[in-house]
Length: 441
Image (cartoon, rainbow, N blue to C red; front, side, top):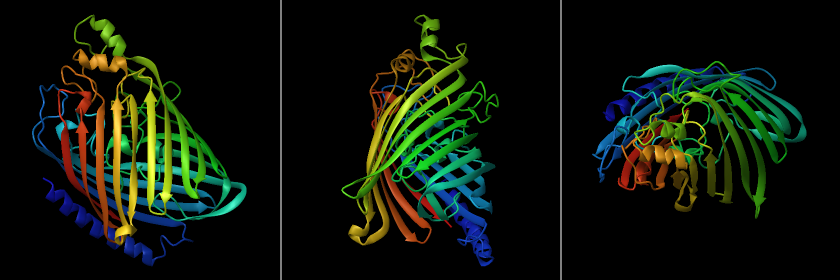
């Protein structure tokens, strides 16, 4: 089950490499070229060890030994028609088999597995967006070309407008040391704010717009994106005046003992057509609560604080804390209402492997009181439902080693340990081992 997707990855990468080499011969991807073509493929294989469970429910992480995998392949096409203007299209193919049907955890173990994952390879448009940068002054900075970003000079004071089909967290909650599950930490509650129920379809993408203003060390950004029609659904709700996800973020770059860092404060609000845990409890009147029948227009808001800080040239640390009001059921991300996470990334120059990275991260996730009581009474959320619950915070530790074996080829053995999976002290702890293969060109 795992070897076949890896073989297909290598075949597709070989084809992608040939295409990329051919385009490079025509001048695509040069710094002065108006065209850009990149390709990535990421395969993740994981094994869950058997663990003790006093009981299991319809949406529990199954306690027996199991395997999971994911495969994603993305082709990035960019066009720069004029100075500061960029168009980007991403065509993606994905497949995967999650543990227990992607149920039973708050912090899931693989950020590459979407809620629509299945054993059949699906091709779809992941992104189609326009970005316009308007320089307004300040010092000049040099930017390297990367997928979905043209390189060149820009000013430290500028306006950036982005609109189209993309992911909310392409713009918000960036973090140098933990943001991309294809190359860094895999766990959902470590690569972004666990309690950030950001607007997205079941694959993690949406339609919307954001405006950013950069003023030297300061950045302020705000954006609005479409919500799904139903909780964690694939179809987006086009009634953008009634149902939407708003966010605003303030960022400040600083230096501590001449080492760079950034601090971000995020506020978000989601207006959704969703259910409510407390209303379900009140309606059940001591019986088993259900979210069906409580659906209406609801407001859910929250906060996030994020820090990234270099310690030396090859050591960096990060911390995140997030909270949401649980005013509506989990709607577009995962069942986490409180989260604190962090970690350290160490470059391999200390042991003669300058292009390698060792990462150690943690997360501590929790639930709002009404959400907890809903599960204790036997209610079923989108991801959780053990039938009953002996509540405890979900505690996660993740370790990975990114081993660069050639240009654009990184193999990353990784391990995770989750205590109180799904916030249940009657289940676990559970251990996961795996490997990730990432190819980029």
